[in-house]
Amino acid sequence: MSKLIYSALASLDGYVEDADGSFDWAAPDADVHAFVNELERPIATYLYGRGMYETMAYWESPANTAGGPAAVQEYGEIWRAADKVVYSRTLETVATPKTRIERELDPAAVRRLKETTSGDLSIGGAELAARAIGAGLVDEYHLFLVPVVVGAGKRALPDVRLSLELLDERRFGNGTVFLRYRASS
Image (cartoon, rainbow, N blue to C red; front, top):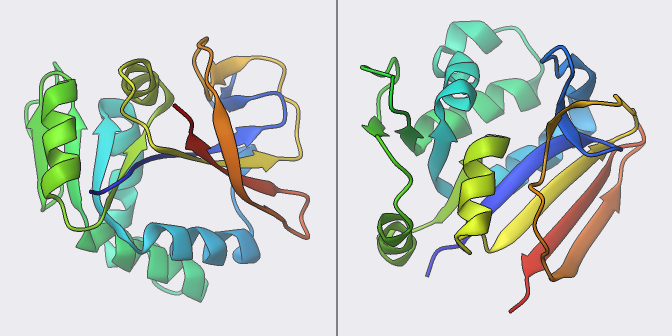
């Protein structure tokens, strides 16, 4: 069975966006980006909320990454190869191939995806991930803690109690720390 993985770049105080909605402080350097690429390679399907999808659609055009570092270009290729499901009540059409719209996050449908998809699934967007976490759908958490404190904004994790088992950790030269957890029963 495929795993559903929530991956997020977050400030040390636990935010994916600051109070102004900015996340430029979380831009990964070359080492972090290359590591992210290795984690993303087995992802067969991305599950996104509307806002995260609109942000990530940037990766659809090779022209956006042309001339950039190899890790950035490679991430674009990885992203384009995967299927995408966008959960939105307002989005009428999608701007990228291999993408479909669902109006609601249906836990039973996500469980079926996990059973039938060859490759893992990734959920992106803190609000959508919070609903999946609340429904007990998330199997792993990939958290990149960036060495910045932003004080307020959009939280990476919802206000729930979770028991997690640490599976892996890595420290990068820029001060970012990667933590990989599995949901415990």
